Amino acid sequence: MTERPFRIAMISEHASPLALAGGVDAGGQNIYVDSVARELGALGHKVDVLTRRDDPDLPEMVQMAPGVRVLHINAGPPGYVPKEELLDWMPAFAHQAQKRLIGQGAYDAIHANFFMSGWVGLVLRPVLKAPLVTTFHALGLVRREHQGAADGFPAAREAIERSLVQCSDRLIAECPQDRSDLLRLYEASPERIDMIPCGVNTRAFFPGDKVEARKRLGLSPHEFVILQLGRIVPRKGIDNVIRSMALLPSSVPSRLFVVGGESRTPDPQMTPELGRLMRLASAVGVADRMTFVGQRSRAELRDWYVAADVFVTTPWYEPFGITPLEAMACGTPVIGSNVGGICHTVRDGVTGYLVHPKNPQELARKLLDLHARPRLAQAFGQAGVERVHKHFTWERVAREFATVFERVCAKEKPLLRMHRPAVRPYALQRGML
Ligand code: UDP
Image 1: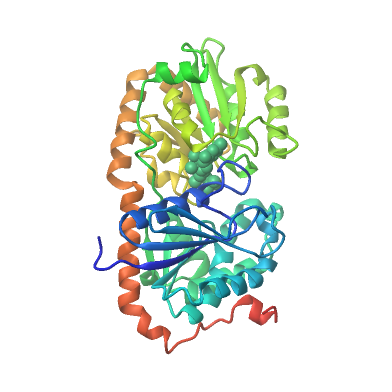
Image 2: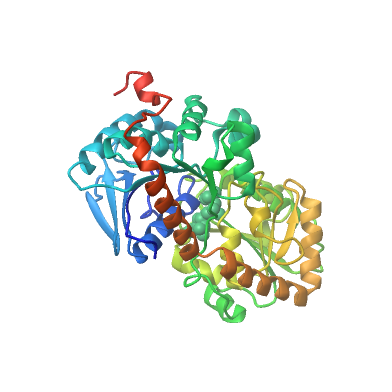
């Protein structure tokens, strides 16, 4: 426990901690906000999570965990809005949030998640007279580098991110790559960045009996089970895993399971990327050796990780990537792209293998290696469990956050009374407030 309990306004405009992860717009950020808030609550701090109302039936407020409340903020239609279309609703979000928070007592810090919440944080900071800590989760310029014209976010994202880099009291980088992107692409000042990784819930994800897990899931005890789990979006490179399956010889009885999507039963109408992947699987001749599972709840995921012989994730880029940690926590070796957070969490040749993204040949070679050397795979799994417990638990992450809040409150709060942000928030520039 740090010196005193803090009261934090945590903003996460599109990623509610109450949402079911696995869909296009619900993944790591939802888990992160949920876990950091819960663990801060468990440490005795008070957290109010502000998230957009995306369902008319949601209550105004949900007591999510001891010390943690979720406040649903009315901004835009009370239904699903793709995150690429949410920026214009942020002035309404900031206005409603301000109305909800004023009169609720003082907050010690604002923690913004993603650039749009950061924008709201810039508006709220002088009102709440509290320092602003920003976690970007993903950076627009990095996304543009990889996605080019397919990136549907408004061009204003870059300007907002630059404002946040200049004006946030602290920036949280999730891994060394994130830190160097902030320095290289946004000219962030290094002394303003703290590095705090994502974590994993080791009470929910831990090793178990593979045979029993397979029985519960109805999987064959004899197949070499390859697991891919996460949001079904092109940048996750699931096509690369499918292509690698086509390179495995028929003497290796293998099966690829793809968990994730918008619905429990895989539905290409709801998740168009699924349709593309299904067509690819048929085209490369592996449709009969792979199964699209659909979205699964948190409680069901451990069985999937435990049942797998190997967890594979080969995105083009990855701001952090919580799924490799979940697999490692369950004692499953990981083959991941040598990018972003994955090359920080997965130790090549120790907890699994790092491979180039978009290289099915290399991935197939590593899969065959782990199939041929089960003892080595087991040792990788065990090393993964140890690594996770040492560096990547949410308890540890929350303690690191508490230290950042303590420092930012002690050192930087007095300055707030004198300085307004150097860059005027986007909506003020556009006359939206
Ligand atoms: N997830 C889930 N159910 C699913 C698919 C994914 O709960 O059907 C969770 C997964 O366990 C992980 C998160 O969604 O905790 C994905 O986070 P990650 O950081 O790996 O990727 P992101 O979504 O941030 O791109």
